[in-house]
Image (tube, rainbow, N blue to C red; front, side, top):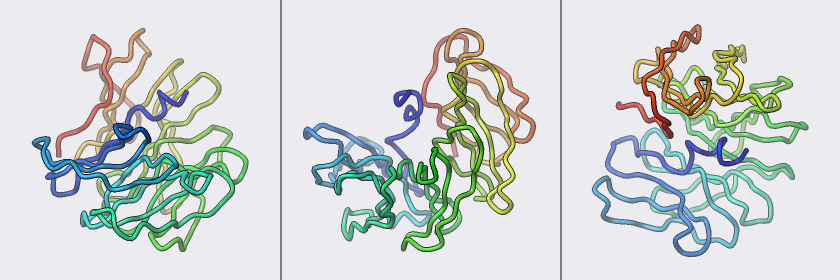
Length: 233
């Protein structure tokens, strides 16, 4: 389950396209690093006994939000892009994971089971204005913001079925875009927000598809297995 839900995580381009934030255990523990696009300038940003993961850049590239279990439970933290001023912004007993910074403002989406099952929440970088934005019998994971910051695509699991849904942030209305048996995930928005690329096993192997972000109409792009789609900006 974790490998599928986290397949798209652990790496993200900076807003200016010059650096990549990633998670690595090269020093014996999961920590967060940044590296230049040409592979030089590797810099370790975190150094804690707990797992540090899920880095996501602020829109201006000056800060990174991430999850960490350094205090015994996974919570959400914010730090400067150079690793300085690492600040814990959630303190619930439940695991808070998979933070994603809105591309347009200071809202951060994340996943938490604080109300009994995994749902999506929003919070500000200072820990204020916490609110829940999904509430369904499905377990919700892997929030991915639309380019305009108005919607979040996410993976909803129901038993062994993995589907992609979208929630409008303003009114919390959710739309189910896929409903096939098996796995649909790895969702990533097109730059204009009209389409979503994703991975699906509907045809027997986890191939790459693109679908309309409003009605879920999909077309298959690859015959062979694929993983971790990323749309060019």
